[in-house]
Image (tube, rainbow, N blue to C red; front, side, top):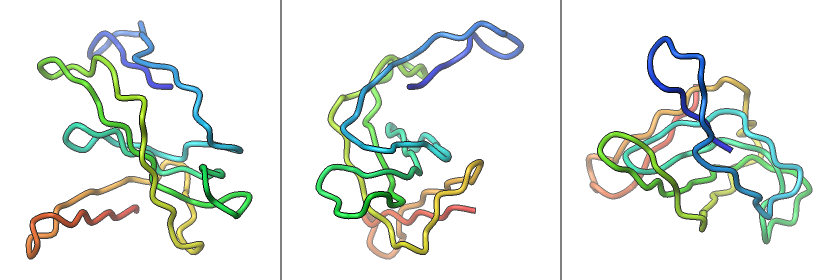
Length: 110
């Protein structure tokens, strides 16, 4: 679920989307928008994962109109992370493109 307000100083919020996903025990720790993707750092049990709960990145491709998010594509991707990567609430996600290859994404969570 995602929401946006009407602009700086506004207290009125609209939901951009609500989605039921096939992820058990799902909880979001932090999220960011990178280019046209919503990147979520979360815990839970995504499809095809053996563990009851793991940390993972979940991505949705966003639909935009100008500078506003108007929706998203319902298909999502996830990347299971090493068990040492525990999703902390209020962590900050930094995403960069590897300059040496130009294609590999590098994520850092502080």
